[in-house]
Length: 243
Ligand code: APR
Image (tube, rainbow, N blue to C red; front, side, top):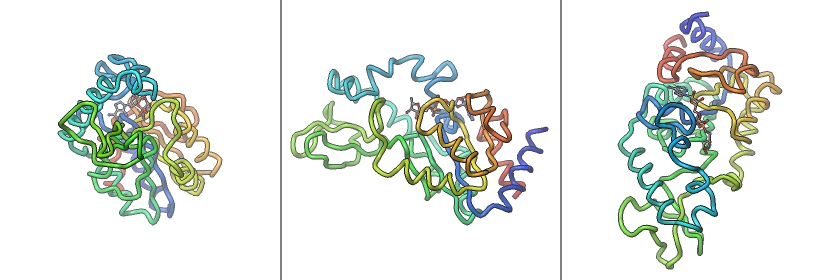
């Protein structure tokens, strides 16, 4: 089936669906110029050890190194723009009665694209919190490293590090949305980090039409009704065009 025919098939399903959901990963932001974690030459985990940057122990051991890395990512997020894939998902939210976008991304590009019903399953880098008093603040882009709270405590990014719990209620809301969906789109994720990747099985159990959008195969591919070998920034706008 051609990419265009797959886009038309998904649009047909969406047209008759009152409830839909999507799970996005770092691949969604590739066409905005941001690296993924595991694919491509710029993959973050190819050039950095996550255990030295994205765990509570790493932060306790070297908060300066961790903050320098997150500040670099935050600056890259700030100069990136939402791409046609982000904009297409925001348009789907306007066209479907209930559309919940569950993202593993912390770059904020879905919100900047206009999506509103967004669950940031792995937190965000735009805000930080004090490890002493819990105060939440806008992440300071400049100034001392590591940044400190007014109380003097260290600030940490509001992202979910390996080994940490997801934001309170986030997974439960995502589960509820997917368990009631008629269509579930999985875009730009390697589908190997749980519990996010487990939402594919939740969608299947709900009888949803499950579509993967990824230039490469993933462990979720065989569990999807359709797996589209295309960049999300190319395929998702085609779906909207066919609506
Ligand atoms: N369009 C769609 N998918 C793409 C594109 C594109 N243009 N370019 C690459 N991809 C795919 C890759 O083939 C890969 O399968 O995006 C996927 C990105 O996978 P990862 O780098 O593993 O990113 P992600 O799935 O978001 O990682 C999940 O792992 O490290 C943790 O917390 C981090 O949220 C992250 C989680």
